[in-house]
Length: 232
Ligand SMILES: Cc1cc2nc3c(=O)[nH]c(=O)nc-3n(C[C@H](O)[C@H](O)[C@H](O)COP(=O)(O)O)c2cc1C
Image 1 (cartoon, rainbow, N blue to C red):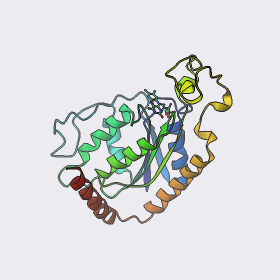
Image 2: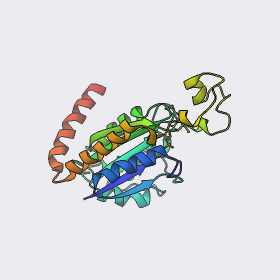
Image 3: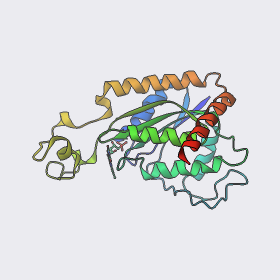
Image 4: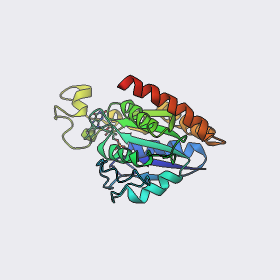
């Protein structure tokens, strides 16, 4: 059993709250994993060329290309992304959009697998975790747990956070705010989030031991059929 972790943050591994939260979940599984950061990767969105219809292989050659095999081979996923403008950030959105390549014909490469969805925002990341869960559903992947937390908005360290009217410190504490170390949010300061991360890792590990992909596939197919009926 192998789990693939993906952190969609553009920040480095030490600074990124998303990366650290995804890693914590992976560590809690006690299973083999690989964690990939999308930092610095150039991944285009789907261009709807249908080049993947015959063989489920995307023809666009960019930084997603070397990841394709890892996505196919993994038994489960921990996927995290930062909240940008109340939604999933563009790099992670592009990556997941291109999972369209796995959906065609007998496209059962990912069906019935399991995932944990992770969202981090300067305020909150739950909208992102919800979105990841939704996208997973399109490949009949079941999200067994969602974890979200408050990361560190750049405005706390950009140098203008105390005076910038549109910045997070002023938004949270009002104009004239004096930034102190204590008020800077970080995932490591949120015991309930760290606990949820550990629980999610254990949940994923439990699911992957002897998981029955065809049963999960049937369940997800039913959920997605209901979703489609409601959305048309
Ligand atoms: C372009 C941009 C837009 C952002 N928009 C939001 C937002 O709408 N809501 C929010 O809660 N945080 C927002 N943030 C803050 C990030 O979600 C926050 O810094 C988070 O910690 C990023 O994850 P990371 O630490 O893993 O990089 C935004 C950050 C950037 C760079």
